[in-house]
Amino acid sequence: MKCGYEEKTLVSYVDGAQDRAGRAAVEAHLNACPACGRLVEQLRSDVELLRSEPEPAVPQYLAAGIMARVRTRSRSASSWVPVLSPAATLVLVVVGLWLGAALGRGMVGPLRSPADRLASVGMELTKDLMVEEDR
Amino acid sequence: MSIENVTPSIDDREFVARAQAGELAAFDELVRRHNGSLYGYLWRLCRNSADAEEMAQEVFIKAWQGIARFRGAASFKTWLFRIATNLCINRLSRRRPVDPLPDEIPGRVADEPEEAFRRRAQSECVSAALARLPADQHTAMLLFVYEEMSYEEIAAATGRSRASVNSLLYRARMSVRKTLEAARERGLLK
Image 1: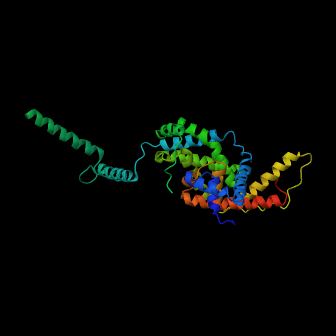
Image 2 (image 1 turned 180 degrees about the horizontal axis):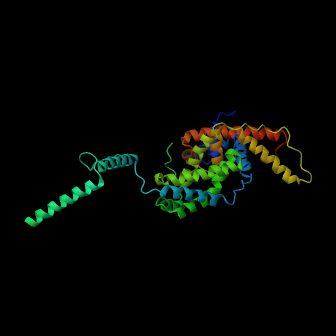
Image 3 (image 1 turned 180 degrees about the vertical axis):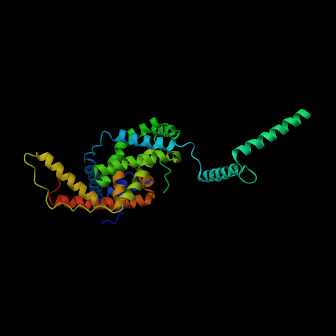
């Protein structure tokens, strides 16, 4: 710009991005500088030209298509029974594996058959009843 | 720049709160309100209907998935366009070739009215002026011209500072000015 005035300031003025003091300063300069006045008008008309272009046609089914996909994502996200944090999931897996192994061994000692386990439980219950009866 | 310091729309806030509580119908309303302008922005960025449509869907899915994290300091629209801009940066990392200014406008189609021919020539010059811009200037220019965002909103939507937006728009406006002036000198524009 031949007058030396900062063009960036003129652009922000045209764009409405100057505060009141800034606008006043620019307008004072424009009153005294026809060249800057012409640039300001050209910048305004450029934006008007760009905005005069027709809007692109939005597909009529766009909103429905978007919501269909959102609903699908929403359903697949909620199909799992409560979503756990990775740490909680790991703890559950470890506990589950331990329980499975422990149940297989009958909690203490070597693996026993189901019949043996039921028999031992029955013996324990019988002992308890005898203790109760003795009281 | 953070997404703060941009006044949110009061109407959108009510639907955002309900969507954050899991109400799909509320999110549906937000989609209806903003899908048009979002599609327009994406179409102007990539100039392809199928790509714009796919990206619009992806943006809204990301918005739905992340809506619990939306703090509401900026408008929902600004936040949505931030998601879109980030998505476009990833998708369109290589800018399409710049359209050269046509040396001559393709001849008028038979029986094409003068006005229709003039509008077609104008559209081609506008497309060329915007297509010449680097990606960051192009994005800022589209948000300013067609979404009428303020510098602050553009900063929030692009993750830049206000000063950076000022610089981007200055360079973009000067480039567009130069291109349109050349078009006028060659008789392609009034």
